[in-house]
Length: 159
Image (cartoon, rainbow, N blue to C red; front, side, top):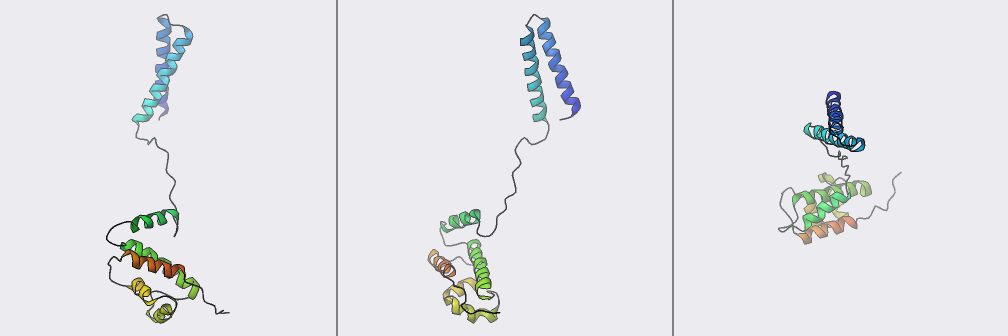
């Protein structure tokens, strides 16, 4: 709100209080009328401007595996017709991360395919590297998640 608009509303409130006092209303009641006129006028002025009157929303920071992502995945699993590609992409990103950190293998590298099939069942690997964008059934997706969850780190130590 501009300073001129606030000044105009306050002058109007003083005039309203003076007019009500002039016509015989008590001092306290006329001050109350002036206060009401000021409150309504300032509120009306604030609403009339194009300034949003809502609290700003903080930015949503969501990392992999955050509560929101898990909630979206759970809702996706309730859908009919199989598991959507978006949910399967999340499982692929988890597989990439776990294979990289636990076994130093790259899911996208064809040279690592034999080593990946040694630590994951071949059917799971086939689903994870499938180029075709088709939905899979819930049982297959559950087996992929189980295989990723039970993936153990290597026992050999590298210097």
